[in-house]
Length: 302
Image (cartoon, rainbow, N blue to C red; front, side, top):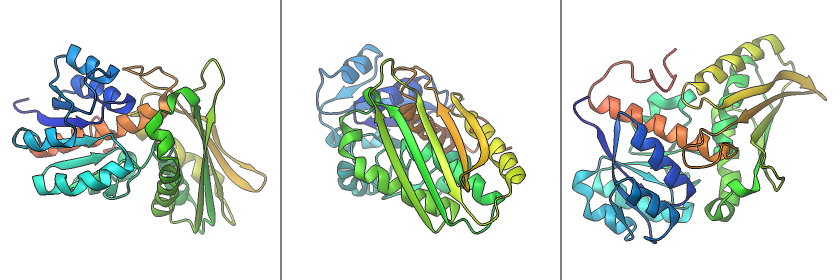
């Protein structure tokens, strides 16, 4: 490949640092900047050890190096991204937002990657959204008149860092909005449980759906195909309870095991949103250099 897409990662916490490791491994991306506020943070020290340029100037570092950047991952907070988004737009740099700010186009690669390649700001919804929205979408493809969808995610308490806890309300609102948008259901609800158990539990997400006449066979086929597509960019995503009828509701359960790049494997909630963000970035990088069949790696092209 002649030219990699030059990226910056803004936010040096768990999500940003795991993103960095994944980006370095990508054949399509080159990290030119890892920016935050504290040069002595674990993430900054990791980046420095890997030979990636670091800065404690935050968004100002992005502005100063704008001429050598094509794409920004914003792994800060919803409140910060609201401030940053206008700056990214003025700089003419694609922003991939890993906060629940809901400013950009919602992106779930297994469902709408191609549409998102036309946007200058894409939002990766939430970890629960990346796990549940594709299932909700598949259920909607197989059934009519969906009245209600509820998603319940359980994650290890230790995998929920300060930014996740600060943004819990935004997380729930954004996840619910995404479920309705992609499934067309009338009502939705998102629930997040932080499990303090030791040893730490892997992320599990259950999707419940209520409709008048569920087509179980068609739903199982649609959900199985969706799981296959997600596994192309999230290898640790697996269905542990195939669609079934329970108390008059359709129920599906999935589990996400992380890749263990920077974070423990139990932190599948962080891994899935980062894998989705990398899938989006790689598709954008391939589009930039004019490649056909963008989604070979991401699994969007069947």
